Length: 145
Length: 145
Length: 145
Image 1: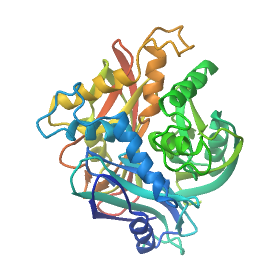
Image 2: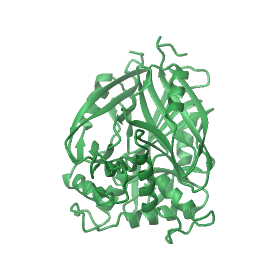
Image 3: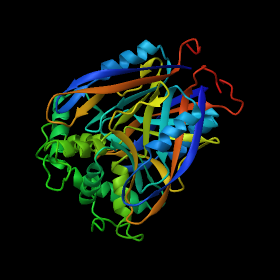
């Protein structure tokens, strides 16, 4: 059984930024044929999501819906010191995913045809986000590597 | 350490379709005593959820709530070419889960008494959905299998 | 490759109860240096979430937002036998997480500076919740343990 983990830094702005290529590269670097990839974001105001990567309008509509559901500056919020987009970002992150798992089959992520892996930024400004890519599994020879 | 993965096809219609039996069968087929089961859906308009499998009214109420929260044909949506239920389905999938993990203890999924594993279909029509079942762990003898 | 799993019982009331310390302790008890920790809650009316553990107002605002989004006693609900807070609790649990995964790097959970792991109780009264902590990975010597 082989393992490999690395932390990548992703430059983001509000909305979705695709990282599928980086996750694919991590699987190849690990040389794992059968296993499990885990993606983990080390933040509480940004998320991960697996969504359609064909029509960019899908990503825009996702962001528009979420920002209407969870409004910046909602008067309900008491944690307001860091600006109108801070507590809304925490709520969005709580509703979405901090970790995603994708099985690895025949050396490739078992994603469907239209699935891409995204960081979803919830703060209004540009950010740099740390994402841990962890790969676990068997190499072609079955050795521990 | 042993691994096993398979892709099953699940016939769905809008709402929840239970797949607990198929996940249990995959764990038994792998012969794993201690480990981790990962369920992954290869789509962006259907989800996974672990919810109560006792009273069917729970599943109906879940679907009713979600379809009121995320309305088909919401005028906010710009990705509209595939019908009124398409972008709403993407939003629902983004809010719910693409992958679920369940530890395996003593050869069984560590589900609580009332927990079942479901595919949650978000499109209005019947669909056939691919779900990857991945099992990783130790066999009774501790061998690699 | 080493594995360890245990089930802890967490006393909760509505809102967030931090369990980061218990997950850290499980990782140390397993002696794993590189690997994957899985946290799984065996209930359908309580959830897991990874969120900010610095300002307690964040947790209060998360609870306030979620309980406004999903109201106790919503007239939409037909599963009402167990009280006004029962079906709302199922909806909240479906929207949030039943499992969380955190990579283990250099013997520690790869959490960001502000991330804590929480049980999020959705029922109105006090509860005792079972949470499975599963740790998988390599020990310092690389042995199977």
